[in-house]
Structure formats: structure tokens, C-alpha cells
Image (cartoon, rainbow, N blue to C red; front, side):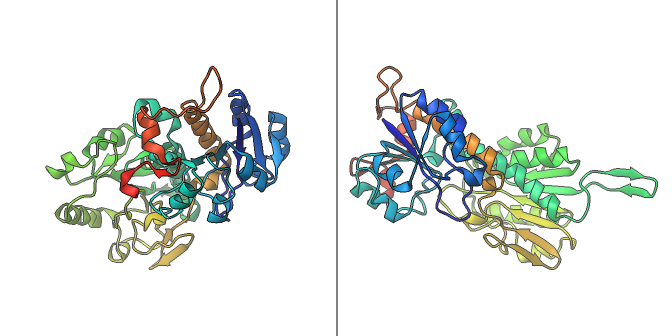
Length: 374
């Protein structure tokens, strides 16, 4: 069995699917490891470190042609899909919603594709949950980026010349990223409030020392899916929430937007009119910008200035802390591989009765496994 690790092609993707530490764990599966030359360079991992861990450094074509299991962060380009070994297992964050057409190409090669961002939110899958590990770092980094662009201090300070009031930070969306943003902003000394359509998040927000703000009605009690994600709300509820945000955002120095709905365009939460009520020098960080954005003025990969307010639309925010992001992602993959590599005979075994396998596998042996994406 040969496991290959690809170098990411995208210019803005700094992460890598396996680190030298995870290579050592992969070798324990009885696998031979091929790492594409310089695959870990942008994450801070050198070729020599992979060699010391027991891997072989090779060119990209060897990784594609020979890997029984091919590990990646993002979906490889179509030209590389044709070069993958027929019948291999491709594992990564393959983004089926945006890369739907590429799965037909994977089918032609009889590739088994595993989309790790679709892991179910169950106890068994927690140590494989790539969305949680990466969102955690996104939430942290969003506050650091906001602080870097904000022209004032975060904590309250008492000086002989007078008092500096603490920054006021609001978090929109209380998932993994939102909770980490709250914790980071609080550690920096800010006064924090947060909102989410899911009433169940109130206790989590308050446990971190932040104030919870939301429209509480009958619809809000049913705002969470069985998988733990936020549902899309009715227009009536959206209007109530909008009015509440209008009142609250005008008082904030920093707003962190994290609201996402799996498979759909991110909900618009901040309009130009709302931004106009904010004090010049304020900062908005839109972590949902790659899914359309929670702010109408955010642009992917840009910092937009509007009426003195900076709107940060960095793409691939976990990649801004690439070394840690790669380390966590690599561990997620190793944990996932325990489901498909037998402990005794060290062979690839796919258990179609396993709910995790059924949730993440999109293509296998020339067939689409999930009906809704045919």
C-alpha cells in the first residue's frame, strides 16, 4: 500500500495534507509514503523533515500515478485527476458543492473520493472533523487580523493620562469559529457580544463571558438541524434579526462574521446602510466571504474601505496559520484512515455499513454514492 501526499496547486493554499509527524503515524499502517517535492514548504515543513520521518520525496507525477491513497487539502485540477491511479482513494476537502462537475471525471477513473468536510457531527467523528479544526483557527486568526487593522487597543487601560476604554466586539454566528473568536477577543480584553439563530448556543456564549443577543421566538427554537448546523430562517425572522443587528452593530468597534449554511450561499447580515452607522476606524472581518459573504461589501482576498470602516475579506483564513492548520488537518486524516485501513492485515477495507464512510464517500468504482449530487 502506497500513500501519496500532494503539493497544493492553488497560489493561496499554504496548507499541506500531511506533516512529518503524521507521516510517522501513516508508516505504522504499514504504508510506503511518497511526498511531492516541497509539498510542505509553505507550511514550514522541509523535505528533509519528511525524509527523516521515513517518507520518500518524489515528483508530482509519481504521487498521482502510484498512490493507492492520495491525500490532499483541496481538489486537484482536472488535468491531475486524469493522472490519478485508477481505483485509488482521494481524500481531502474536495468541496462537492462547487466542484460538482469534477466528480464525473473522478468516476471515469473509478476513484473513491472522500469529502472530509461532510463528516457527520457524531462522537466517533470528532477527532476527524476537519471543519472544526480549521474553523477553530479561523476564529482565532480573525480577531488577530482585526486587531492588526484596528487603530486602538483592545483592553481597558488605566494610565496617568486617563482611561482607555475596551474595544467592543460582536460575533455573528456562534459555531466553532465564532466561539473561538469570542474566546480570543475576551483574552485580549475586549467587551464581547454574540448572536446566532440557534438558541442552544446562548449558554456557550455566556460561559465564555460574552453577552448573547438574538430574537427569541418559536422559530428560533427549531433553528438547528439534526447535524448541529444552522437552518435557513424565514424572511420574517430574518427581518426581526436584521432590526436587532442594526441597533447593535452601530455601537461596535469590531464585527466578526462567521455565519454559514452548508451547501448554500452565506446569509447577508450586514448591509452598506448598517456599516454607515459604525464609527470610522471600525473593522469588519467576513469569514464567510468565500461563500458569498455575510457583508454585502466584502470582497474575496481584499480589504475594502467604506466610509472609514475596513472590511476584511481574507480567503483561506486557516492558511494564515498554516503550520498549525496543517498539523491539525493531518491528524484528522490519520484518524479517518483508521476506518479504511485494517489493523491486522493493513489492507484497505471500506465498510459501507459505517455511517461516517457513507457520509463522506462521493464516488466509488465509477458510481456516485450520494444521490442528491447526481
